[in-house]
Length: 187
Length: 149
Image 1: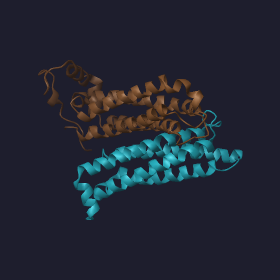
Image 2: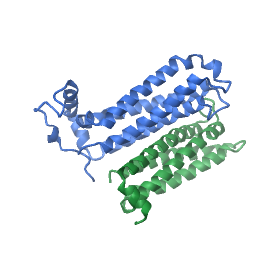
Image 3: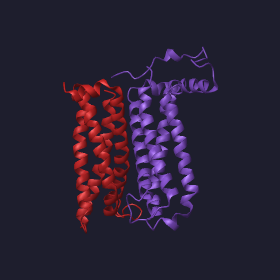
């Protein structure tokens, strides 16, 4: 099996400063990285790949169902059903995927935390996640409030279409940034 | 393999990265609809009142776009390093499971177009749905496993 791990002694506790000097974030990551179950996870041959596979599939479920709802808002699919109906049928699966994504993402982060905070793709992914979350919140607080007024007619108002389009672009970017993490990984 | 396409893709890390990005975008478009369609066909009352035929009419086109993106990008990635992939056991399994997953999904789509189903056909539909779900998960896992072998 190909080793995907860096040597632990690269980041041994005690020197207290990384390339960019000591920081509370780095301290936190080091603490996380040194937790016994995290060490076990990182050193396990099977656990890490399994959790990573579940993570990818959870993102597929989350983004796949959310993008389907976005496509309905854009009028590209399920045109005979109202936006509310499709949202209510699919969004529970989006949330299930999201929960699974976070539940698997956190241990993955812990096992590589010291490297990830210096990984540009990871930082970009976090920013994109925050933007995607803000975009979803905006959608729900604004255009979705009066969804019943426009969702049956087929003609989606421009603000709703803009937010749905932004959602598609942001989530696909989150996924691409996630893949790029491995490219910027230093071993 | 010494074709110019193979060499060009292999020698450009950016090209491989772009292919993998397209591959994952395809996965997203395939994964969500495949799971929703599978779950909808598995349940006796459909998904929140959305019938299997409504689900498949709306979701199969999205799923097809995702599959197309995945097959195109995946072929180019495999062509860039044909020997690496040919010798990889997870890759071989993935190809077998992929063919089966596509087959069951096509079957599921064909059954969804039928006007009415007898209870026996309904049973077959649910079995196909379960099989499709398991097979698509298998494609995902074996795909990720390629990189770990």
